[in-house]
Image (cartoon, rainbow, N blue to C red; front, side, top):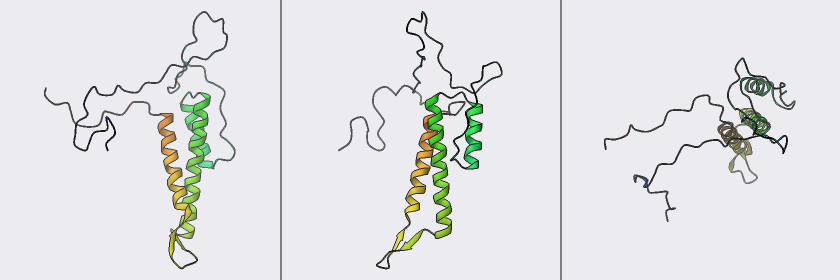
Length: 158
């Protein structure tokens, strides 16, 4: 059974195309008696005239490369606290995938179980899952400055 709206391979989707995703505007609540809302918090690269937030230090448990990447992202983009958490999780996922990769390089892709049959090492799944988590967290952070071009063919003649 095909989900509604999923369509089959080769079929065109019926109805209106989906609108592009937009971010909700977030207003910090500082005082309930505010006469006008605070300006929205931006998520754009910093420019010379803006007031910089205090520098966020990378967590101590990250690798040297992840700390450098963390510091670079924090210096280039204005991040809200939940973005800092996502950035930390992304750096941890990257470190975990690299740790699994080093173990695989050292021990190989398989091991022999008690019956003499070759089995895939658990580090393979750890590396795969960590890479996926890293990619998804980067997508969630949406650090791209310009949106990518629309994929696909040019519109047809109508």
